[in-house]
Image 1 (cartoon, helix red, strand yellow):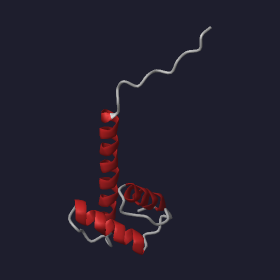
Image 2 (tube, rainbow, N blue to C red):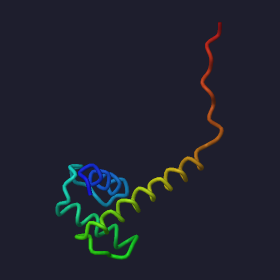
Image 3 (spheres, one colour):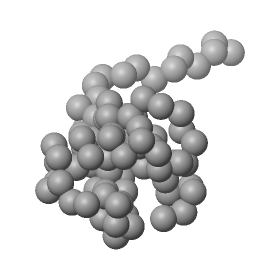
Length: 88
C-alpha cells in the first residue's frame, strides 16, 4: 500500500471517528488500533498485518464514505433558493 493510500485510509478512518492522530501515512500504533476497531465493527477482524487485508479495508472505507455522501446529497433540502440577480 502506497504512502498516499495510507493517508487516505487515515482520513477516512478519521471521518468515521476511529482515528484521531496525525495524517502522516505511517501505519503506526494509532493506525493499527483504529483499523482494528473499524474492522471489528464492520468487517471480520482480519489480520491487518497482511497488506491484502489493509487494502480491503481501504476500499471498504472509500466505498462507505461514497455511500454516506450520496445519502447526504439525497437528503439535502430541495427548496434552496437560487441567488438573486442584481436589478439592472
